[in-house]
Image (cartoon, rainbow, N blue to C red; front, side, top):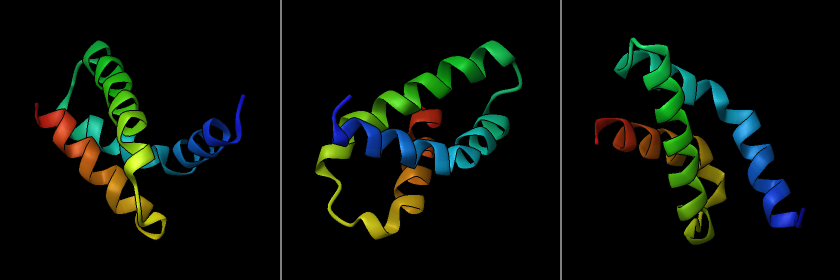
Length: 71
């Protein structure tokens, strides 16, 4: 695993509470929450290389989580 992947996994681990809270708001069915959780992780991974301001990680994760859940 390269350092970029390790850093991403550490961020996800630190902020996973946000992901679970958003999922609970938008989805009542456990399977839907699991699917959405995976989709959020995928969208975060796709946009991670372009993240410029790492000091606002929580806002970035929250924004991606909400937008992914809405769609």
